[in-house]
Length: 90
Image 1 (cartoon, rainbow, N blue to C red):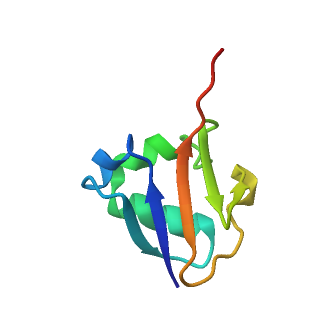
Image 2 (cartoon, rainbow, N blue to C red):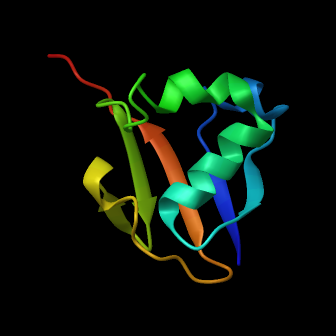
């Protein structure tokens, strides 16, 4: 299945300045794994040393947030994922 991953502007320099990247995968995790295989510079920006999604990274699939423990959710051909950093402070 082919899925489009929309890449936030601050991560675009790590994906050849593309706004979106098409990847293959059956789950959100497979899609993200294929993204970082193609663009290794993203690996530490998205995942910690144990392979878990960084606490400050959000992934949206089908308009819903997919938390780190929900990355094994299936995706459908033509779905779009959005990868964003959570901004905090106050």
